Image (cartoon, rainbow, N blue to C red):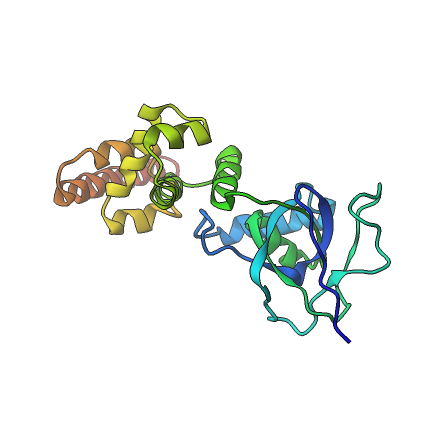
Length: 238
């Protein structure tokens, strides 16, 4: 007997088994702060997931990572119903691969919190744009993550800076400064991808240096300055 595969409609809100989701390899966020993730998990334990995930249906059908992959229960209301269809987490049937477009952090924290079902909205179109704009609106990407995501989107879609600026709602000069961070040496980008110690304005100034050697010198000098300031504060207030 062939098992029925659930059909998801664009713009509809569903309650979906947490094991059905897969992270998007093109997600702008490349790292997660363990402490911040734990704090979000605690919040989710208390109040649940308040903002639905955005997902797209994976191409190629099944992605059977777990032996217990949930699908929409046949007794659940349809998407057109006033009630939201519940996805059964223990149906034991194989489902489509649902790729997270936005909300990977909520998904990871919900796993820590022990949730089995999450609210999620099906989306279509340019999911890279959707994920990037959603993250930019939340303003929780580091400057380097933002620059790399914008650069990747521009390259993949062959956008001019003017077109890209229109999509994300940023002036061209602001966008140009952000994209300039992709000129930074890999060593700097790797450190600043997760570390917010050095602000965006400072990184932009460093990126204006003509040679990588000059960028590294300016970066190390600024870090040394911060270390001295930190040591002075500790000496003043032991």
